[in-house]
Image (cartoon, rainbow, N blue to C red):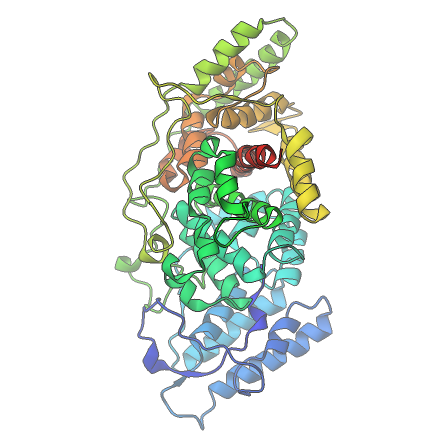
Length: 556
């Protein structure tokens, strides 16, 4: 995503921002020629230099610009721009370069000593579910964080949590960069706005804010963020596809595609534009699952991520991921036994795979998994207006693919339409080669990702567990593999894990700390994040398969 160093932040009067106020865009962006006050675009961009001397010069320039705004010759009401303060706050907390991080913190202290009300981050770390100390202990990989900062200008909470799995993160960042920044059929502002619309379906204010900022940075029209009624008809025409893709992709047919691309359609989409939009929407939907599933806190410069009030008992941070900010961690007395039982079941299952099982029995086991009742409902408050105004038909949500007692839609057999044999080639035909290749690489990396350990045990083959997770998510979306015995899903995925997986994949906005802490109680947090990555990518592939199949049928 484009980073904020492209903008110039200037001094502004404090009258526009009362302490604690977090709404609106109070900082005006200017070109360098409009003002010589505050940090310049050049100095902010140079903070991302690999050259230590250039970074040191940029830090000096940044410090001089900030101190100029605090000069004694300025009126008493003069303040640093709010966005400059938030930019310094973010650098002081998440920049992997120690010199930049310490200088930003020093400038904030200096501003506070000069009487400026400075912002304070509300969260202690990137995740409400993973304690900051435990996350640092398990690692994020510093090299990959440094690469992210040097290329993007920031290290967001998504990157920090994914950095527990650096090989996956590298692939994820390349894919996201290709979708949002590289040459393609859609204009860059439209790409971010489509991601905004998609994230709003899951009430993911984290991604809505992130892509709203990206949308404005690449020249998007600010009025579009005020609601769908302000956007072009062509973009609004994606709403039906957006809600189906987010909640019930198996209902997508070639008729939906025809309505968007046929020559008589109003504001017609080309097939290349439509596939680009579909991949962007599915990417944002699945990434919303990851954000909710890992309990990501708002960024320190996001609404809800900072305050200008001093710390007090009544001003403690509250997580948006839990109605009562519940901790939800349960006693771990039985955790060790659970791990031993799971490992024994994995070995037994691998031995049983050598035995033949009839196709009728395989189908019966699939239907049993598909129709199993797994409760997910959690009462949550209404989404904020900034999200709600970007959603059409908010009552349309996920329903089980095959509710008990009802006629199920036809199952998609993976042998009839798969990513490897069909979807990959279609994406490659209509989008730049790199997008299809990167998506394929990302699916393969997450499917093969293993550290040969499980909880406190080393040298463990986790293939059967990873495959059970992937196939269970596809099962929830009505996709069946004829050569897979779904009895293994019930053996390896205990009920609390199924509740978490189904919630995260199908109702991500209902994920809470209690659900997160209830499964795999003796496992590392990095292992739970690994499970989240599998859920995210399996969900992404399932949604793409249904839509790409509909496009294939339309093209015949």
